[in-house]
Amino acid sequence: MDCDTGFDDALAMIVVSRATDYHLVGISTVVGNTSLENTTANTLAVVEAFGIEAPVYRGAAKPLAQDPQTIEDLLGGAAMGTVGRAFPPAARRTVEPLDAISALVRALEAGPLTILGTGPLTNIAMALNLRPDLADRVERLVFMGGSATTGNHTAAAEFNTFADPESLDAVLRSGIPIEMFGLNVTRQVPIRTAEEDALRASGQPHAALLADHVGFYLRMIDKVTPRPMALHDPTAAAYLAWPQLFELQDVRMAVELHGTHTRGETVCEFRVPRKGQPNARAAVCADGEEVMRRVLDVLLGARWA
Ligand code: BDR
Ligand code: CA
Image (cartoon, rainbow, N blue to C red):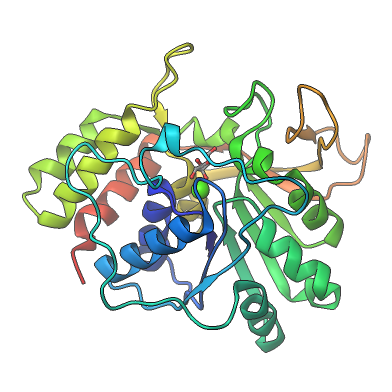
């Protein structure tokens, strides 16, 4: 798993480790929601709190071709905003000495890998740029990012693809199998005060902590175009656990690198193969209420380490 933790990345991490059959071989961190220092510290705090054993590797501190575009102002503090308690900093878990790109290369050398990306794709692009021969070891990259409709960070672009468009471009060119969970599908998975209330009502300390973070997360609802808050990163993780709850379609995907107003936009051509050869699959439909119900069940049962 490659992430820019971030509260919703944290939830995705819990879902992957508790609800899927995958063996989580490693977690790599990247600059995105906040600085690399913060995403790494947040990741260590989450793995320690929830007893997630996978080693944590520090990745890229800068996107491939631009300055970092962090959003702490939106996400609160070090991108782990809360209306009450905060995750305690990790006291025992520490980052691995090996960097994330070398760790990813080493893992691919060892055998095939499914990668879940919930942040900008910088680490993955760097690993594949370094070792293009390992592309065929990637079984698939499931990533939360992009949109087949409108953006969130800008009118056109979703945050993860806006934060490092060149990395998505490199990953698309690498030829690895890609499954995109963009805003068009994460917006079908709403999280509401009912979920915050259910976590709080469980009486479990870990659930109360998560509820405090959900409370903050819900405050990010788009005030201009009000709609329920979308469960972004955990939706991609939920696909690894319950693929039957989703529908994907073949697409020809490109990412806009130059547009004055559209940099970072994912342009998805669904009329394949007539208008182009497919190079990715895009999630288009989710049974959103059921995804949220199952994610909530996982969170309620996750407990402290
Ligand atoms: C994505 O951007 C980040 O803020 C979230 O963690 C998620 O990965 C949603 O656009
Ligand atoms: Ca993220």
